[in-house]
Length: 297
Image (cartoon, rainbow, N blue to C red; front, side):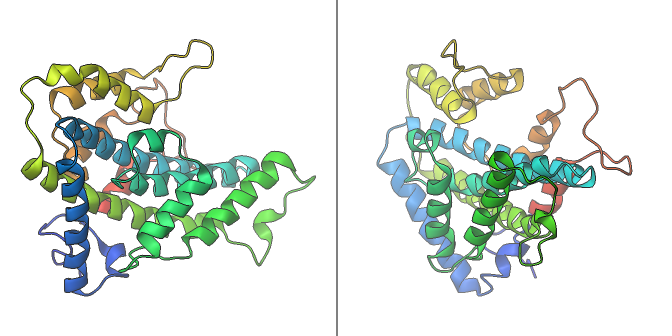
């Protein structure tokens, strides 16, 4: 069913997107429309735009992995009946999944993204990917978002004397509902990473002195990848982020998820010096395997 849907690729998996956009001509229209969005963004900006898209595509992939990590950790929390942790992790799993796509919308600048509220996130996501044809993401995503938000806030601000919220018959079961949207959003972000790689490689502007953007690149990367320390007002990055920030400056051409995946998975959550969280049966959580099976075929 995948048969080079949306783009000419023998390895990309867009199975969840095909549920929504089966017609080949509609797939082409979607890709062409976003091509034009990205080309306009590049042509209306200076050479610095290439650095920004490198940072944004990498941030998007990081959000995909974050979303999956939160989802898998939520299953451990559920098994241990840590319900406050379960609802917290479930909500933020969907939050980061939506963000993986929103960070790739040209009209949402890095500055806007750094100040993005939860309400703005779901509003922008739904208006862009659900309400506009070809309605590539199911429009009940906001129902799930607000239900998860309700569950998280219930336990955060009004913890019940005994646990009952998960068992309510008329409520959504987060661990059942979230995986579909994680896979849909991950495949959508992956598709956009392919479009961005193609557009930037063909239309980016050349600079004779990239070093004039070094401080800007560091600022853009830090703003998107960590908060300011409340006491020092500094951005504190992990070593792997420091390395990736330098790579964004030295090799600014954005690359798709499918190309960056192998390098990224080697760096993600592997420097903790301890074992990964485990399911009750002893298996370690494995975000990389989940993401691989989602975006590759």
